[in-house]
Picture 1 (cartoon, rainbow, N blue to C red):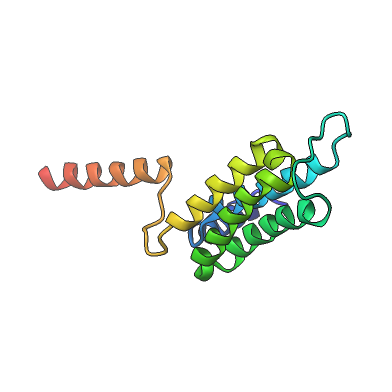
Picture 2 (picture 1 turned 30 degrees about the horizontal axis):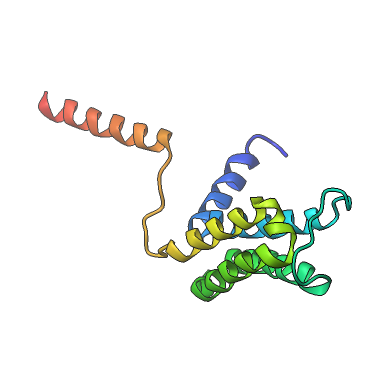
Length: 146
């Protein structure tokens, strides 16, 4: 990839990311993935509590799916985040104490971030953009004062 193509791709990704609850969906999906990975831990490490079998794989799989749905269908983020927090809390019983607390916390925090995201917020500008705008304002003020 050439240097000319990178800023455009990065800018378009940042624009795509700003229009959806990116971090909430990502954390929810990562929480589900982490819990699925702890299911594969050795039997000396794994503590199976409560229902075993399908539910231990179903809830983290659902968490990962909900995280992706939050990313690619942000209009339904409220429903996905409520189901995501319930699935995350359900892994406490079904999947090694929620992936040894890590996946559970990632899922709950991601669901809360997705629930609290507002679609009509102005996207944050980067530090460079704020400095550039301040510099332009200072130059305009300096030329108009002269």
